Each structure stands twice: as C-alpha cells, then as structure tokens.
Image 1 (tube, chains in turn green, orange):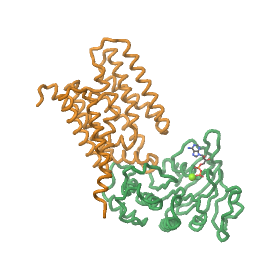
Image 2: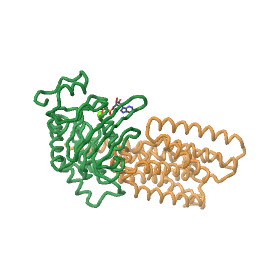
Image 3: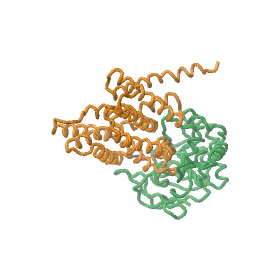
Image 4: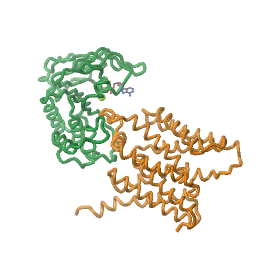
Length: 240
Length: 270
Ligand SMILES: Nc1ncnc2c1ncn2[C@@H]1O[C@H](COP(=O)(O)OP(=O)(O)O)[C@@H](O)[C@H]1O
Ligand SMILES: [Mg+2]
C-alpha cells in the first residue's frame, strides 16, 4: 500500500502540493486527474523518489518510499520521455533497461523476457526497430513493455495517452486492464477523463491539494468543476 | 622502416593514444559532452604551466589538477545542462588565463610549449608508452564492464536512475576518465586539438553504422588509420604532427558524409 501523509511540496516561494493525504491499496487502479499544473506529475515523481525536499511522509508497504524503490520492481512511464530521436537505441535496448536493476549485465534469459514483454503489449517482433522510428502509440507501449519486463508490482503512468491516437489509447487501456486483473497496482495520470473513468477503481482529483478520492460513479460534477476551475464542461452524463 | 628508436616510440605512442581516445569517442559523441573534454584540456594546460614554473613533474601535476577540477565541475553541473555548458566554459576560459599568467613568470623554458598545445609525436618517451598502454587497458576494461550503464545513462539519465542504474557513479567516473585521457594523450595532438580526437572518430562511426559495438570498432579503425596516415605525412613532408592528425580525421569524417545517402540509394528497393 502506498500511503501519503500531509505531503507539502514547495518550489521557492510557490506551493505546488499542499497537505496531500492519499492511500492507494495493492491491486488498485487509480487515476489522478486535474488541470495542467495541478501537481500531478510532481506527486508521482515524489513517490518515485525523484524529487526531494518535501514535508510530510510517503511510505510504501510500511517502509519509506526511497528505501522501497531501491529494493522493489516497479514501472514508470513518464509524461515525456525525452531522448534524441537519433540516439541509437532499439526497442530491445529500451525494454532491457527493465531487467538491469542492480546488475552490470542483463540476465541470461533477457532475450526471452524482452520478447515476452513485447508480446504482452502486442509488439512482438519489434526488437530491432530503432525507437526514433516508432509511432507515439508504439513508443508508449514499448515503455510499458519495459515496466512489464521489470516484473513490476506497481505501474506508474504519467499521461500515457499523450501523442497516441484514439485506437492506440484503447489498446493501451486494454493492456492496463489486463495488468490490473493480474493484481498489479496501477497509478495513472490521465487527461482522457472518459477512458480513465471507465478503467479505474478510484479517481483522485488533484489541484494543489486533494479535492476528492472516490469511486468514479460517486464523483460529483461539483467536485470535478471545483478541481478544474471553470474550465471544465466536458464530463459526459453517464460517467457522473 | 624506422630510422631511430625515437621515431618508433613516436609511432607506437600515437597508435596507443589514438586507440584510447577512439574508444571513448563513441560514448563522448552519444553524451554530447565534448565541451567537458575541452575544459579538461585547458585545465591540463594550467597544470602544465604550474609544473613548468616550479619544475615539478608535468604529468603528475596536470593529472592532479584535472582530476580535481573535473570532479568539481561535474559536481557543480550535475543536474542542469545549461548550467553545465556555462560553468564549464567559465572554467575553460579562466584556466587558460591562469596558465598564461603562470607562464609569464618565467620566459626561458627548456620545453617546447607548442608541443603541449598542438601535440608533437616526437615528444613521446618510453615512459609515456607505458602510461598510454595502461590507459588503453583501463579504457577498454571500463567500457567492457560499464557499457550498459553508460548506454542507459546516455539514453536518459532520469529513467536510468528509476530503473536502478547508478547514474551518479557513471557520471563521475566517466568524466574523470575523459580527464585522465586528456592528460595522458596530450603529446598526441595537444590540449587545443584533443577534443577533435575525442569526437571525430565517434561522429564518423555513427555516420556509417548505428549499433554501439560496431560504432566502437569503426571508430577505432578510423582513428588508427588516421594515425598511421598522419605519421607518414608528418615525416614525409616535415609537417606539424598533431594538426596533421586532426586534419586527416576531419577528412575521414567528410568522406563519411555521403556514405549513408549513397547506400540508401544503391540499396533502395525498386
Ligand atoms: N522543475 C520545476 N521547477 C519549477 N516549477 C516546476 C517544475 N516542474 C513543475 N513545476 C511547477 O509545478 C506545478 C505542477 O507541475 P506538474 O506536477 O508538472 O503539473 P501537472 O503534471 O499536474 O500538469 C506547475 O505549476 C509547474 O509550473
Ligand atoms: Mg504532468
């Protein structure tokens, strides 16, 4: 279980996250929603130990999250994985990183495990393609394959639907649903409310602080409006 | 073939130096850290100036200076690429200024400074050959052992860290390795031209092939071929050796430019 207690994060004089309290249970599929700049990515990076200097506490399975991330397998699909498109990395190279934890050399059966992870995300046979030549949806699934190869028990995805077309998004969520069925914990940041609502056990509305944390069908339009400010009118009836 | 042991020493020395730097040139190219090597080279020159002033051992003093300052610069610039370029350039300029001031205190040197600035194969001594051999072994071993870590750190350091690659270790050791290479190979092309030797073989290789092991092999071949050609040209026409080597490397790079478009044309499916 991931437990966030009284988390406050400031950058200079700006408060980016304020007194956030949140529990995420094992095997739960949680979607974090909120407007741009709400601090969603920041919260995820803090959980993963990529940012320091916050107040409050973050524990996973009862231990400090910074210790947990060193000793457990988890996957991360960042909002924008930047790399030089000419960087000579293949799909297999990218997925192999998921097998490298604490190792100088990849494990003996890495070829098989890479192939299996690629099959899992429906990219069988893509091993030798260069990542700079993939479509947005293919690349996102490669990043998911990397997390799958890592034998992750927990998946952190930051707006995985960016740069992916509609068909690609539904493929992505089909794979996520399969991971959830296998008992994995999924923490997903999303701007595709319709898809996220349909897929998640829980929706977390975040805008600097936590506005709501509830099952999708219980979320009221008021809370969503409050989270997003006035900007939102796009929530469809049958999801409210 | 070699009229004296002096020439033979020079020949072996330049081959060893070229092999060493070509091995590093592939990761240097991938990481776009050539400006760091440029700064380390200028700091090396301050070390040389300091050693000359007090009549100390040049290699030991410049090695100490460059390892110390490479760690300082790496520490100061660890998290920010823009800062990295700016701070590194400040160190580059200031170390050059300090060198010139140090040199101004004593005008009658027995050492040819141009040799350290632009290289001179004939300055190589048997002791240099030993140092260069050790360097080549260290480079090869480092790449063999840390090849994957270096690759993932170059690919994306933040993600590499998330997936358990010790990126700080890779960063500091790689910077120190570049710094040490600059000092030990200084007599090959000198502090002003060393960056060319650290990037041209890698750049040329990536014009021809895309996979890392292949690129390393091509970079080494290009670098050694250039070294032999430069050596021959230098003594046939009595030219300055370091600059000739750099020009030959550049020529190889130019020759590699049309290769990929040409290959694409020849092998294009009808
Ligand atoms: N490196 C940074 N330095 C300063 N401010 C930042 C940095 N990264 C993000 N922020 C700020 O923190 C806030 C939250 O950002 P982020 O977590 O990326 O939001 P979200 O993912 O919800 O769109 C934003 O106002 C953003 O401007
Ligand atoms: Mg974000």
